[in-house]
Image 1 (cartoon, rainbow, N blue to C red):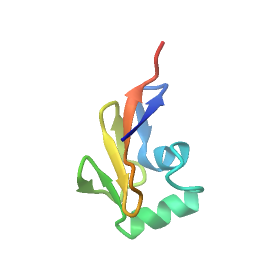
Image 2: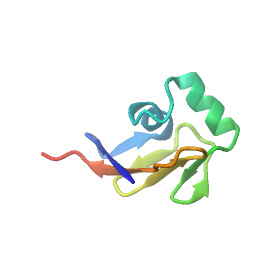
Image 3: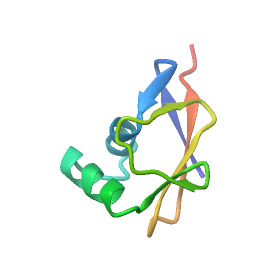
Image 4: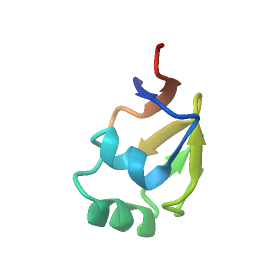
Length: 74
């Protein structure tokens, strides 16, 4: 599992997918969400605007390494 630090308290799922490198673009993020290829904390998720917080785990089907959101060190 790879940790992805975020600056703010929350990040939207579509932003995290791009920021973490799980997808290359917003269009690709929309596609993987529509196709049901994304899980948040082990549950399928299709909402691009889903707010995520430190401790949430996001996995993309076909990608071997899920990402865990962590707070950015101060």
